[in-house]
Length: 146
Image (cartoon, rainbow, N blue to C red):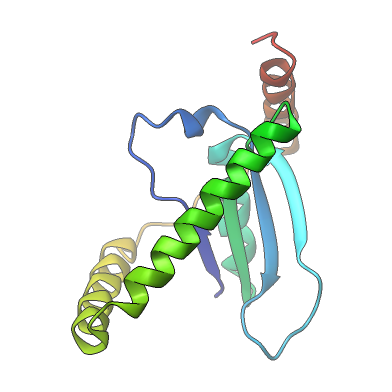
């Protein structure tokens, strides 16, 4: 079984309406190959496809929204925001009490794993027809038709 990573968003996040991509890559450092990027999909389709693939293989799947930018300046703004967030994260990690934060993190991860492993069957991957319908809805959104 592999790993699936995605954003933890509030229920009212506008990002749910964006197109989403899946990046598949090696789970461990032993494997070295170029990641495979698939999409765009609607979020539920992306999650179901990623879950179906990593359920059977030792892969990492990252499901994330595409941020359609319409100018170089908008892209630069997104890059600057990501750089600031990375600096903030680095400062937070460097200033953290290693052992206290580690224990908290382990507890949180164990709690999350316990709630995720509730015996529920993984989502069934969408059919080709469902994916194609989703592609049409994404195209309509990106071209202003929906």
